[in-house]
Image (cartoon, rainbow, N blue to C red; front, side, top):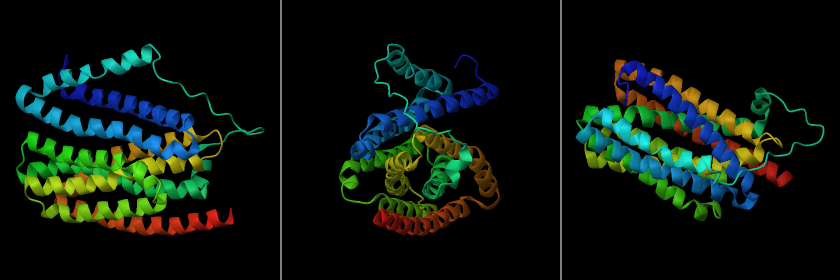
Amino acid sequence: YLLPGVAILYAACVIVGLAFMLVNVAAYHAVGELSQPEDRAINFSYVALGFSTSLFIAPILAGVSIDSAGYRNTFALLAVFTVLPIIVLSFKLLPIAAPAPKPEGSTGGNVMDLLRDPQLRRLYITMAVLTVAWDVYSFAIPIQGSLTGLSASEIGLVMASFAAATFVVRLAMPFFVQRVKPWTMLIGALLTAGVSFFLLPFATTLGAMMALMFLLGLGLGSPQPMILTLLHESAPAGRAAEALGLRTTLINGSQTVMPLIFGGVGAALGMMPVFWAMSAALVVGSLYARRASRIAAEIDMKA
């Protein structure tokens, strides 16, 4: 707002991204440490609801603000929302999780140790497919909306439809956690998202895009609490925060690289190949998750 310009915008994106990464890892680790094992998935769902609420409100607020007041004033409006968390953190109004004790004789380890762990590796691979799908949504849906002829406010409604679905499915997570196994839920989420991306090139109206984005939100919104729970439970003792940090690093790496790839493919071939390639990757990911589910079931039986 104070120094408008493309260079400042790039710098602001880096700062905001770094801040979000730190908050994300710290918040999820705190919830995991403060939760009992039987309540961890539900509590992760509640945290995810907070993110879903912001995802629902922000696109509409930003779209309407841009159309009515312009980009510069919109940035000023969004900056106001940082005041409340600054006050809460400054006065220590949130519970703080104590550091997790490490087992006696533990010497720690490096990141590659986490990737060598079979259970964690299966989770990271499944998560990688879902992360790329989120990146395609974030990058390609505004472009697809523009190509379809939607205004900024209408694109905001499309993205808010996605956020509303993530809110709804995460609100229902306490019900599903009691009845559906984690890997089964991941398989269903991958297939649901795959169908959405396959149909997306055929959506040429606001209503059709909102419907598909709602379906996509159901698919991509449901896995996060389960993945976070599985990561926290599968990580070596005292290294849950490191496992969550590696997850965030992989997500940020994908968010850096994938838009460049998608942009090149989209510019050369159009958006349809991008959506269909993502659909194929999600279907293949569901087959991999099915295999991982069988392995996890065998491990549980032996235990």
